[in-house]
Image 1 (cartoon, protein in one colour):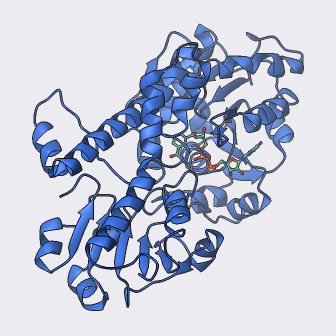
Image 2 (tube, helix red, strand yellow; image 1 turned 180 degrees about the horizontal axis):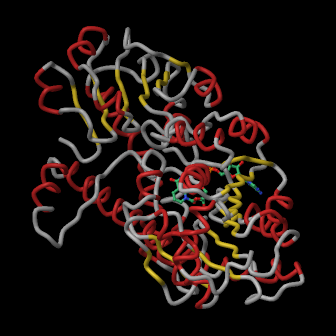
Length: 446
Ligand SMILES: NC(=O)c1ccc[n+]([C@@H]2O[C@H](COP(=O)([O-])OP(=O)(O)OC[C@H]3O[C@@H](n4cnc5c(N)ncnc54)[C@H](O)[C@@H]3O)[C@@H](O)[C@H]2O)c1
């Protein structure tokens, strides 16, 4: 179907009649909720993934992303209705679809080099099925300029840009709130190769997003929006961390100071913490640093600072043990949190990983617990799994899982051998912990 020169009313009718076919490449934490939302609004959605297990699960109406509220129901409902199916055959999906969305990982290696191989792989497959009037949209977060670098690959189809449309519409959400965000927490950002593609893509997202669309002047500008959002977070978290370290030196409580400072409308000091993880915030700064001819000093320093926070957690742990006459070697250390964020099963760049590696150099008794993990995950990172607090000397909170926010301090006080808490997320009620006889330390806390 020719999606170019289509008006918004026609787009709505295509959704209503079930005539619009959308292929989404990448059925992960972002791609699958998007697929489910489009299908629920009436489109015929083909989800493409290289992971056969995932594809089989989706086709069976099962949800491979259990941490996303509401997703399970949307998948089973729309698979049953025949509006959502999944496949590993990307070329066939491209042949079948009118609109193709690329939502595969955009990663960096340990040295900050960007790896866009999944994006290029998908573009090659799309080129084999691309037809005149189709639109290709990248939703994965891209270093500015990347979407347009796909044009030579897509033109292997024999079509020229203009005969097909190209756009970038970045995913502006995160696991746990994806469906809410996709359907209208924030406006969708869209940049496109020409006016008719911009109109069509805007109309498509206006159907699912209550907050509408912000039309950008170019694809590259749309790419920069999402990357800058991530850089903003990273730099501001680094600032909060730096001020928190200053507070520790000055015997101040950072959270008390930040809270008061933030009552002034121009001040938005973020939460300090045990480190920045996941495949978004610590990754996107590299998209700017690698592309820029300048040194990008501020962004680079912020990245370094945030990467140093797990080591600071090690220092706090050792300090807490030493000051209480315990040797790290013999102490039972229970790390709470293995994933990068509470209640999300994602280990990429999790601060817990470098923390565990380093603390194991000091102690033989390092245990871990995380409500979304299992013994197998603990084994993979070389630590023992522990689900209770018996004989524990110190707990070290590395992520903000709901269960950790609701820790019962009375129970904890009864079962721990020594009552020491190192809080890397500022989630324990410090005053109450102290009143129960706990030694409490945390990033930026006194
Ligand atoms: N997770 C988030 O909170 C979040 C938020 C905003 C933006 N993003 C961005 O969205 C994109 C996708 O992230 P995600 O969280 O969904 O990743 P994810 O790791 O959860 O899922 C990616 C999926 O893509 C599949 N895949 C990998 N290579 C493929 C290929 N060549 N062809 C088809 N499928 C392939 C994987 O098997 C996996 O199922 C990234 O650019 C990310 O930066 C993520």
